[in-house]
Length: 171
Image (cartoon, rainbow, N blue to C red; front, side, top):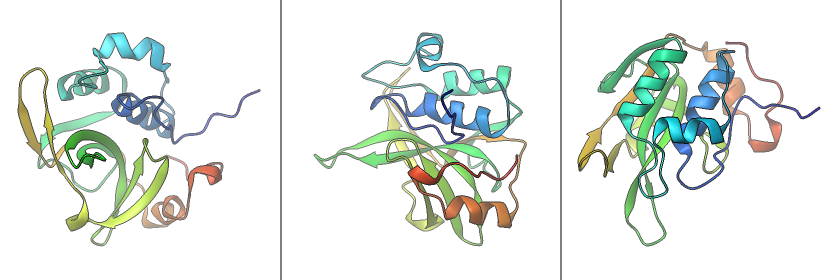
């Protein structure tokens, strides 16, 4: 039997949104759908990835949704739209799971790098430009869920790396 990890790495360079939704679903013990099922239903494309509207609609229908939008994050479990610096120095939108906050530091899961990091909020590139459905720049956009981890649980996450994803704190 194959072991299922709660922190889901993305399968391709354009499925970070799907991996984040799968991660949140696993953390909250909600049904998890395979990427091949989610991709067409979310309208995920190689060029554009997944729109914030599709992410929000999926979460509203299947997860304990709280809110979505710019400047709505309150420190709990969320999917945040950040930006990723490409090798050619261009920025592209990228989704990460914010697990929570410890003081001024955000504990987050990056599905592209398959790592948990703890960074000061000021160092997070929390502005992204998306091409669909039209050219839009989002600042501090997040998809928020009705769940907050304790500081103790966040410290467990903060000590994790990709191979050590076995003992997760309960939701």
